[in-house]
Image 1 (cartoon, rainbow, N blue to C red):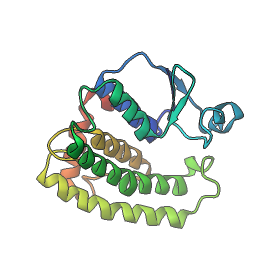
Image 2: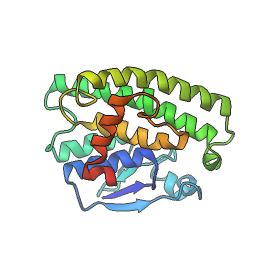
Image 3: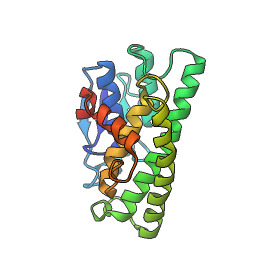
Image 4: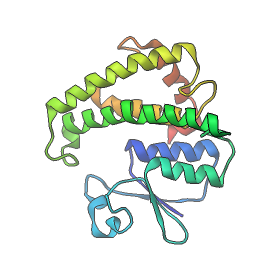
Length: 205
């Protein structure tokens, strides 16, 4: 199988962290040059029509896109260690946590960075700096809630490390481009959590 990724992009990194956590090896990693527009070429759009990464090309030629779908596929093929829930109840609560991080942390971070950082201008035309800054403010509202959650539980979805923690870590690392630092902004529990995750081998992907 081929996994199409891009250095430093948060969604491909989520998949790569997921694979490391599960000990999955043997995929052919293909780097896509986003700044060079490789994801918008006819050849790549034949695999990912919306020009998005990551994309997983299966051995039969079919292609899975969307981070969560790729991780779900890999969880099904490699059930252990479990990262997405062992029964219907746990799966639902882990998915709720992961979706919250995806929509209310990662998305605002992405919008802020893409619309305010000059290095992302090639990928976001036109940029709307005021919109980007407003997304940064929305992020801080969610982070205040998240910090309180992490004061009462060790991980994003509860008592164990899950895919939701991967999503949050990748979001916070990408947020460096908007100069967001949890500890410096008074979110001590979130900073402690971030530093703990950073010690995991998967965080070095």
